[in-house]
Amino acid sequence: MTTIDRYDPSAPAKAARSPGRAIAAASIGNALEWYDFTIYALFAVYIAKNFFPGGSETIELVKAFLAFGLGFMIRPLGAVIIGVYGDRAGRKAALFLTIMIMAAGTLLIAAAPTYAAIGLGAPLIILAGRILQGFSAGGEIGGAAAFLVEHAPPQKKGKYASWLQASMALSNILGALVAFAVTSLLTEQEIGDWGWRIPFFIGLLIAPVGLLLRRTLDETPAFQAEYAAMETTAPSLPLKTIFTDYFGALVKGTAFSVLWAVCVYVLIIYMPIFVQRAFGFTGSQAFTASLIGNLFLAGGCVAAGTISDHIGRRLTLSVAALTMLVTVHPLILWLQATPTLTTLVIVQSLFCIMVAGFVGVAPATLAEVFPTRIRSTGMSLAYNAAVTIFGGFAPAALTWLGSTSIGFYAPGLYVAAAAAISLAAIVSLPRRVSST
Image 1 (cartoon, rainbow, N blue to C red):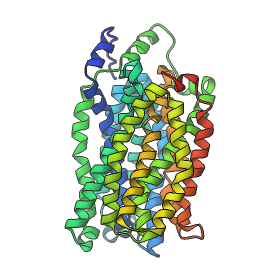
Image 2: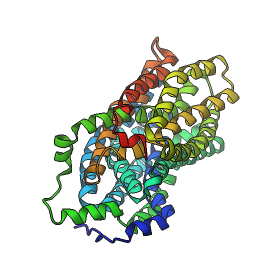
Image 3: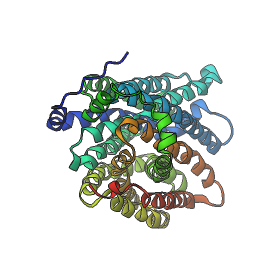
């Protein structure tokens, strides 16, 4: 049984005095999640050869990305189970659970025997690792965002919640640095034989720090107050409440989250693979551009969240979404016309700035759609529905589309379509999302 911290009226003041610890504790699990996903994407070529052999290089890579995407099929289940757990047992308990499961999935991938060693069991182990990671990730975003928003002062909710996505950028930077080091220090043969495992084992080092931080967390003041009120009323049923009283909010939140999912997976995760295959850049060049771009992503997320606290979430989100709608494809055309490292760095940096303008504001926005008693469940369901349908299979779909007549037009068209969907949803979000 999980023990809920008894409500302390001084809790909001205490939380305000230690924002750094709350932000670090909530963000580190998200950082581990994105580090693992980034590393998988960056080393997908080597994973494909070791675990999904047979056919052409394109088919092998599509299989590897399908395993990546299939892990997302379990995310809605993780969103329901961990989201409800977070709304019933507390944000602290849910955050501790997600990082343990995430570490277990990472260990499976890092230590998996290859297809040459055990045959069909090899890709099944990779899939099992991705399923554990997907289940954990399903509950991570809702619990972590709820934790940050509920710890934040009213005028700083956007800034606090933006660190959730800034941690994604920081983990991408770590992933790019590790990938750059591995590809620079090892030969192609060494990377293919064993070097690709090094980044995953490095990721495991993050887990003990996250477990320690989350184990010693204080529960959020808002949840303590809600839990104290629930002790004198009927037990809360978050899932039932969402589908009976907040179904419209769930639909709007899911539509809003489409661009959140797509822009990250296409412009951040998939882009280093895309530029190598479509325009002939080397792995080292792609990782260098990714590293520089993610510096802008990290700073841009916090800047966008802070700006949204002053001018409103809806305006900030609308500008970012509209910018991606009209500029992603022209930037890819420019990169095709001038495939130099300088152009790649500029384009990738601009992509990261645009993404930051949206995802840096998204967690606080989605958190404000749902009340405290169902916030973790509602956020997890809305976000993961969008990620599962539109985000997780994006690399596999774009890899396949890239081999058709659509070619390198696919990423820009996919992002533009997602931006149009999310723009329509943004204008329908609650009024409190547009002002603080």
